[in-house]
Length: 118
Length: 211
View 1 (tube, each protein chain N blue to C red):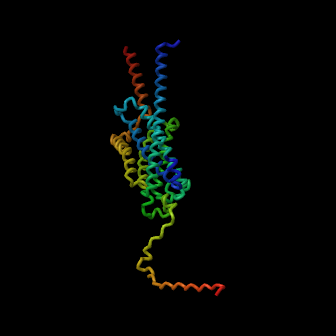
View 2: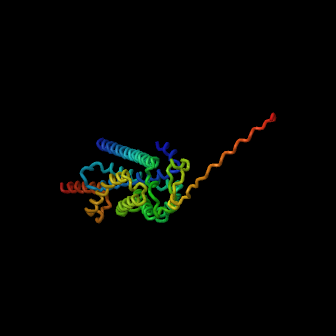
View 3: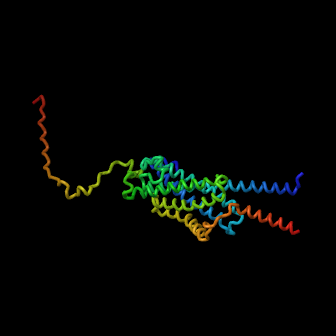
């Protein structure tokens, strides 16, 4: 037969272990929730950056070690209608062919209406 | 919110996910290093909280590994970089910034190996595991170097704040630990609690003998 003091001590030890286990589970749960919340916040920040056109990868000029990577396109640009091409340096405005003034062709005179009565 | 954003992010969803997971991994790993260094410290402020800090260290480390896995795997779906599984798993082979990305791959694999070796301590041996586990700090530093070298958001203020706020205290604690020379000493393979129990037992035995 076990000593009642010994049984009490065992019960206390068991309760302590149970309490510790509960605390550890709570810490794990809180850490997982915190990590997910942090992920959501960072995801939103990066997304907002991308949508607002301030994304560093889209605004940075291409460098030598990125030559294998095709340039990224911002979401709003992907669906936008094609913009007019800007004049490039290869064809400066000075070199453009000057517009030749062409006299407007005279409008043809309307033909007289011929009716069966005439 | 993320689901709505994912729909409108379209083809960039994997890229955004990878960037966010990488940042989260960086923050979590720094916090895990802080918790890990606090376990070893003999500070009076943590007296009685040792078990909780240990549980926090373990939870943060596992969350870090999960974030690192998401960071790498999400890139598989990115159709701009379009890396293969080999590009993401073998260091210094990818086309995108091979050196910095390679450092990140080395850090990721090493953190996974060293972190998960905790569950194989009995076969590795406690003393050997402890001496191996110290290298975690080195791979954490490599992870930071990877984020600054190849991270898209490396120059952004919000990213630098998220990097410095948890990594600063971790670095201070690490330097303090290195300064005390604990890394040079051999640590007893027997946990301190066991030593305390053994000392108490010896003291009671001695008192019994003397009486």
